[in-house]
Amino acid sequence: MASVVHLISTIIQIFIWLLIANAVLSWLIAFNIVNTRNQFVATVGEFLYKITEPALRPLRKVIPNFGGIDISPIVLILILIFIQNLMYEYLFRL
Image (cartoon, rainbow, N blue to C red; front, top):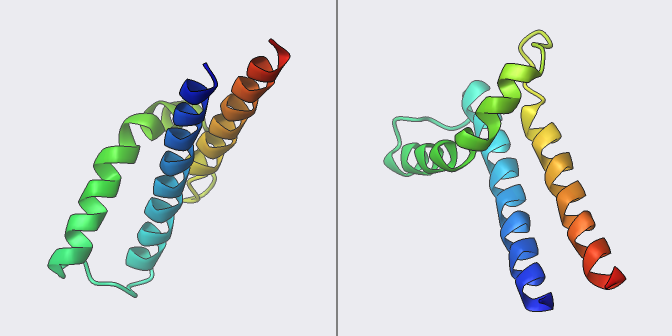
C-alpha cells in the first residue's frame, strides 16, 4: 500500500511542477520575453496547456477575477499538497 501512495505522491509532485512551469511560461509570453513563433516554445506551451487546463478550468469558474491575475494555479497547488499530506496521514495512521 505504501508504494501506491508514493507513486500517487510522485505523480502529484510532477503535476505541481508542470503547473509551475505553465505559470512561468505564461508570464514569459505575456512579458514578451519568449516568442511563441519559436516552434519549441509553441510545442512546450501547447503541451503544458493541454496537461494543466482540464484541472484549472473548474477552478477558474469558481474563483473570482482579481483584475487579470489568475490565482487558480496557486489554489490547485495548495489543494494538491493538501491531498498529498492527507494520503500520508492516513497511510501512517494505519
